[in-house]
Length: 111
Image (cartoon, rainbow, N blue to C red; front, side):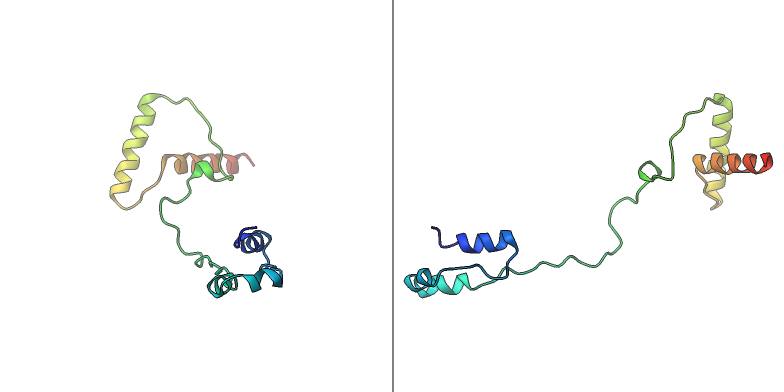
């Protein structure tokens, strides 16, 4: 039996200390005994801080659903131009936000 088997078994099972027969401890060198009494250090996760990288987008948000609609090219181009003009005036709005707003207004007018 390996001198580290008890330690490995203890770590796998989540026990605080490995179980070792006293007979085995007596036959080992003193240096080996001191390493067996060491307990694995618990690594704590850092507090939930702002995650690095990109924020989650609409694609991964369950509140959104991707849809396809056919609109005329000239309408789409004109809308993109207007949205770009607004973004230069610090009034940035995405195309999908505009569509959401217009559809919400349409639904309100129906009820």
